[in-house]
Image 1 (spheres, each protein chain N blue to C red):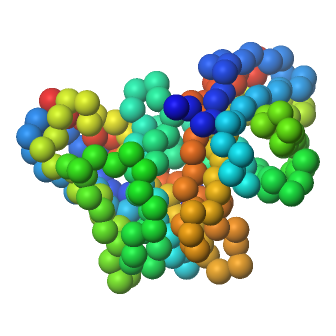
Image 2 (spheres, rainbow over the protein chains, first blue to last red; image 1 turned 180 degrees about the vertical axis):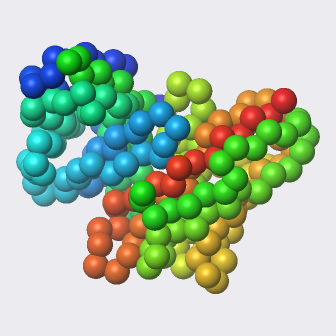
Image 3 (cartoon, rainbow over the protein chains, first blue to last red; image 1 turned 90 degrees about the vertical axis):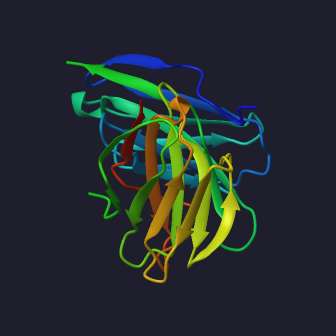
Length: 115
Length: 115
């Protein structure tokens, strides 16, 4: 049972345009959402996060939108740059007890930004 | 550089063997998480430790075990290895004081190949 789904395995975008990566989730207990970027042969790098009490969080070129009623979040990258080419994972979490924080990851979307 | 270190970077071993993967969290982080990423798969959560205690368990096989030591480094032990255990194993850390517990910082991973 995939609780976090990224239905697009790949996305190609022209440099300078907007990249929109999508993620859907099924577990209504999730209260925190994150996006990670991963280059080959490296560990995932934290990009941006959003709490379920918000619907938007912005950090430079990266904006995450959360639509709780649709159980959908998206990552917007504007403008896209060739260096953004990587695999992007969305992740969701909820507190189990105390300091327990388990993240569930989507399967990733390969973003390619074309020069 | 996330500040999380993992050793070894690569490991090649035979079926039936036992290996130990090591992780040192970021300075000040109390939580350590272990994830498995098989070929073309997303990150699967295995287990979390917080300040030496197990806090959450995911899809971790009984052949696998982990522990976190007083100096907060962690080891993941994989025994009776099978071909299907070949994967990237990532360690992540979080829970530095005054930082969000959900934001996990990943190490570069250990690539395990079972032949």
